[in-house]
Length: 527
Image (cartoon, rainbow, N blue to C red; front, side, top):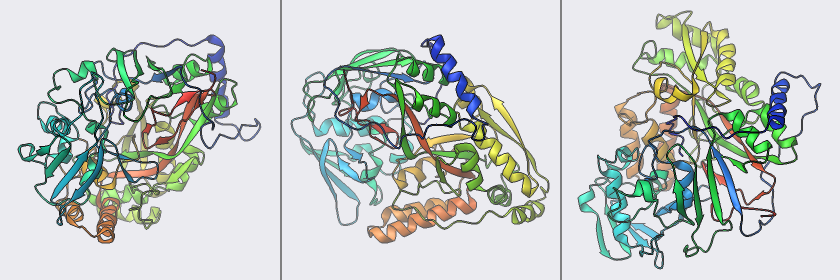
């Protein structure tokens, strides 16, 4: 599942009473001042080679009962995608583009036409050979309005599906409407997993792909199972199978891990106190993924008072991101300073306005909103939301801003609150190439532009960056785009959080980049 949130009802995977009591004790640590000695959290997952075989049990959080195995869909069952499918291009652990089903790619001199060489000797789970026709069909499927893919908003301005060409079985030619030097990076998105030619009506049920696992069972918003695909082009995966369980509550997921009932908590960023309990347990531990989650306080720029850029600037200057990191993450993260591009990205610029509550007061007075009072919505959907909201509330008070933190129900948060309330808490996973990030989340008209911010000058700046074939100049333009977002946009980015992943002490080979891990190499010790 992606960080595009579509929660719904799921069954609860019961946990033992003893482990529930153990987790309950974790909340006692939240406000401690050193009286209780807490274990140091591990920096990464356990090292060493896994044994071949075994079944990895994954607990996943709420999702829509309309979820599907179609990777192009906004309701795709994210946890299954990396197991069942491959993309043309992927992002490696260093953040660089790497070959997947495309062995290579090259542009023409203007970056207007891109040619991809499709890997030979690859088969789908039903035995069909992969060809360029499948890659072309995948792009057409994403662009089809009936699919309603989130990635269509990114690709449609660039690709006319009628112009795609397959001069031979292993060559895909993609003419673009306008030059784009970053085009291959846009194909790394999780909606871009390759599906078989003509599979639109069935792919949501069959999950037929070229990935290391093939589908055994799948229930929307329920349990499922995938088994090793022995003819995978990269070789057989380490595991025999992966079982997915539906666990609606974060505490229940953590308790199931402590009880030894599951091996990995997918999409669950443990709060610091719970992570301490998990790390201290005999069955489980924590993998710490640096700056893996990007936390946001989006201001809806179509709703007053956030229609006024001075108010948006004041909201950003009013709080201290370092304070939010210290309080909400207990230091397990990095201050964002309202720049959504993570510090590890080569395009990241470090320059930012300083915390300045007095200037915030001045801007609010200019805008006619001196002594601003506003609601900030949060929920238990993610354990960091409320601590982040409270830390912002505390910090912004110095600028005379009164924040009323309101807690909404977790199971309806992303249908009733997100993109509907003027100010709320949310998060995304990092790992997006910079053009994908800006186009999907900040470009005017994007379906996932959660602040509804629209600026023609910003959009034109992105277009210039895409056309620029000089790498250094293109990086400079993306730097200008970051400054634009910081100074004028509606998204406050207090921090990048180290994601604290709960997993069994038996798990080996857990290496996460962005919001994905290596399904081929992960395994269990003592399987």
